[in-house]
Every structure is written in structure tokens, then in C-alpha cells.
Amino acid sequence: MKDQEEAIYATISRALLAGELAPGSPLRETALAEVFGVSRERMRRILLRLGSNQLIELIRNRGAFVAAPSLAQAREIYEARRILEGGIASHLASSLSAQDIERLQAHLASEDAAQEGGDRAESVRLSAEFHVLLAEATRSTFVLQQVQELVSRTSMLVAVFEPARASQCACDEHRDIFTAMLSGDGAAAARSMRTHLSLIETRLRPGVAAPPKDPVATLSAMWAARQAAESGGAPADPTPP
Image (cartoon, rainbow, N blue to C red; front, side, top):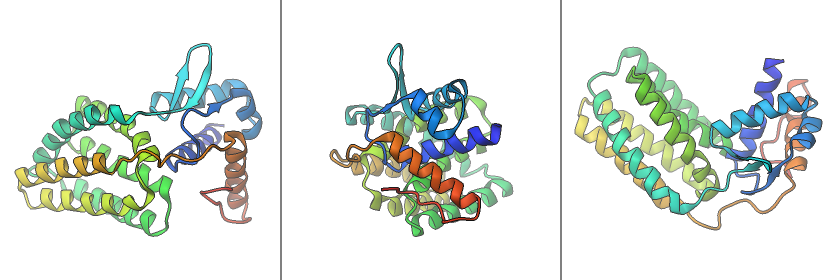
């Protein structure tokens, strides 16, 4: 049962991070429970998790909606990230363990694979995860919590406002940060991180958001494709019609 909830969460988050669902679209609990074949209680649990990760908005007495972030929020959020994550990059330049290095190298390879495969949702997810991995490498629970909060807030900004072609830029910029940290130059690592976050902010553009689609039909198609792939049928299509 837990595996099914994870699969449903992954399907909805993929649709959100790929920009397949228009900001502000309603996510009706009853309709989605029918699509995924689960109880309303379980569907509510999944929606609550999506809400806690800032991917959807939960409005009291109204329900769940695809997050509709504003570009006006971006400057304040990215400035906070530059302050916090610039310090993280500088700190890690002198404290990365062999295990940290191996983990980051594997992650960067996954980013490259997602970008080469044209998997927009996976690229956005992995891009966010890179920053969380750096926070984890500090071994500070407080730092990790702060980064997770800020990264969650920016994931949907990227999904809604960043052109899909920009994913290669993010991969290259992550490698620059990693290389600077490996060199042991804390100032260069911090500079690379701040530059990267500033460039993400400048790539955010109005008018990139997905055109209106029926979220139930979109998620139903994605869920059917996932089930077919898992049962040995046709491969899952991350961008359903």
C-alpha cells in the first residue's frame, strides 16, 4: 500500500515538475481517488504531502490546487538561497568526504542522463536534489531543513517559469560548483553557487506556463502509461497528450 502511495505521489509530482498542469488548476480529491483507485483518505494523505513540499496549494474549505507561484516572489527567495547556499558551498570546499564526492558524481551523471533523455520533470527534480545533497553533506540538520524549505519553494517557480531548454545550463553550472569545491577554493565555490542561483532567477520568464489541460485526464493518462510500463506493456510517456 505504501509503495502505491509512493507511485501516485511520483506520478503527480512528475506532472507538476514537467509543467504539465496549469498553475491554479483544481485537484479534486474524489476524482483523483477514482483515477488512482485509492480511498479518499489515502488520496488526501498524498495531497497533504504534495502541499507540504510546496508543489500544490491547499486552501481551507476549497481544496487542492496546482501551485501558482509568482515571479514577484522569486527575488526574495533566490536572495535567501544565495546567502545560505553560498556559505554551504564555501564550507564544503574544505570538508567534502570521499563518500560525499562519490555521491555527487553519481548524481551529476543522473542529471546528464535526464537532460540527454529530454526528461523535463526528472531534470527539475534532480536539479533541486543536488542542492539538498550539498546541504546533507554539511551534517547539519538545521541547514538541511532550511535548504529543503527554500528549494521546495523554488521547484515550482522553475517548473512554471523556466524554459525546458535551460536544463542543460543547470547541469553545467552544477558541475562548475562541484569542480570549485573539489579544488578546495571556498571563495570560488561560493561564487559559483551564487552565480548559478542568479542565472536560474534570470532564466525565469512569464508566459512559459503550460496551457490549460484537464488535470484528471492528464494524470489518468500518465498513470495508465506507468502501469503499462510496469506490467511490461508500452513504455511510460512522461508527456501525455
